[in-house]
Length: 463
Ligand code: FAD
Ligand code: SF4
Image 1 (cartoon, rainbow, N blue to C red):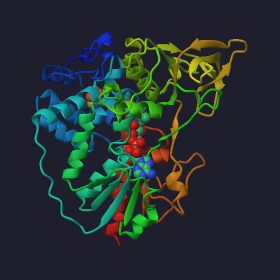
Image 2: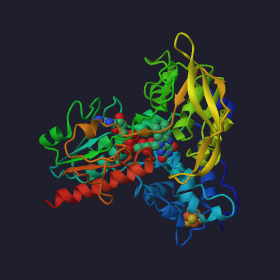
Image 3: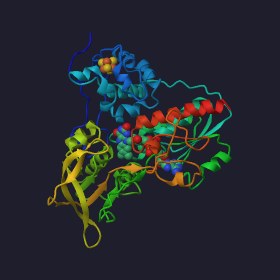
Image 4: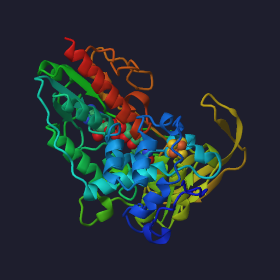
């Protein structure tokens, strides 16, 4: 008999006033009983609308049915059939705009907690399950992957399973991409990402770090060395700025630098790390996406007394996940909506002292379909802050394009690919993830890595 409660089983979380001072994970996860109770809310719909909302077609009703029966390892294996990183996706996927949005239970009440259940089975497996050793028959072919983010890791894993000798070239000293350097520990513990990376190494994937392709080697050089296919999964790590005066003052960070220092260089453990990050008592974070929420919540945890999110549209248009906005509010982040910075003001010795903003109102929809923010004349005002973090978007770094003959890109830098295969304009070179789409999501990057691995395999096997 289905559990007809209109609400999801609540997930235990750290208290907001405790967690906003530490970097431990916010949500603590379901117990076995909670997971079974939530799984019983699923109606096992024959037409499976939830699956249509999942970019990698996880067999949602099937895995939830196994959870309801208490077969947690079976449920994990069911998810793993199509999703290589369930512990990551269960935590960071925007389920509310994907599978959970299409769940029939969401028509009246809350959807089934698909993401929470996915996370539960992945964590249960990590604690109690066993990974079968996959027997791999080498096929004698070499493939190179540029970038160790979700796109590159997924592509590398799928190629390794097909017997390829795979080498990942990663620019940073640590693999994982945004999962390691962008998304904070309190949302995605790094030990989970490391486990996935270790599993790839077990399969024989080689990961060469501190290897900036375009500087250390070019793609042509890799192909001359005998790599028969190259996958570019180099992400979108080039931060955008507002082009207003004061952006070069001390105390202004791109979200990229701010979060990298905190997550990758562990600045939050200072002085037990090499890289401190200076955070003032009052901090403004400009932007309304996940990156902005992560930067604001990190600033609070580093001791800032007041943290403002400054966003030029209203809450309805905010691209951040609902859960992140909700958590940020609970943790005391203040939202200055319909507000846009006009300049950053500095002290005589070059440090930030305030950000000048103007109020906005929403006009007609623009090309993105969202209502265009229009400045309200005469509403300029100053907000006193000592730190400004700019989180208004990122684009692909032009390094690879500028060092690769014949690689076509969009004007804004996204690599142009054939949608069905991920093939670029250069023979033997494939691409996917944020390097192609611009800043998007983990699951889409993984899907693109999978598509390209399949296309590479078909192409090389047909040679
Ligand atoms: P990346 O993860 O960016 O990985 C690219 C890798 O390539 C990096 O490791 C980089 O160092 C390396 N690289 C770059 N250039 C070179 C080169 N020349 N040579 C060698 N290596 C190179 N998505 C969600 O679904 N949910 C979320 O909650 C979410 N939150 C986010 C929070 C933040 C702060 C950020 C920044 C992004 C967030 N995203 C989220 C987006 C998501 O993380 C990305 O869409 C996803 O990581 C893209 O994967 P990718 O593999 O294409 O690129
Ligand atoms: Fe279960 Fe919702 Fe999917 Fe129906 S739509 S099968 S209720 S998760």
